[in-house]
Image (cartoon, rainbow, N blue to C red; front, side, top):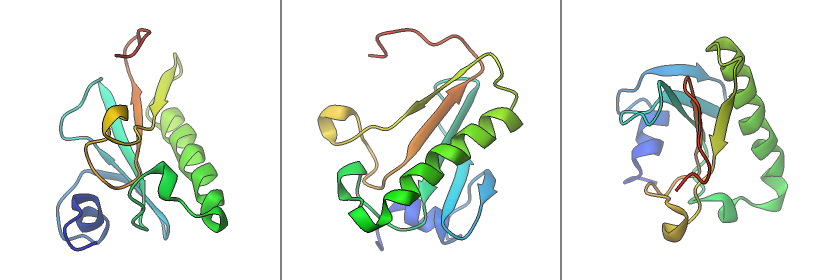
Length: 113
């Protein structure tokens, strides 16, 4: 998508503090962190949100979670972490590209808000 900020980051057209990348996924630090560790993990393929992922791409959802787990270990989040997927306006999604938030480095409260 030509106007998607995450697509531009994935294509290398916009700078980001990238901490993981492979052929299908990209992870980078959030510019407005909500915790000491706040990483966004995205598919390189543009899907507007969780509901837009086609059935034949569901394995990518598992890979997104696996990368979150791997990064949590690498980033020293042994005391715990949270993975969040916002979906749609009422769900708090502000960028129309599927992304997971990996949050850690502090205690998380419930309900999240």
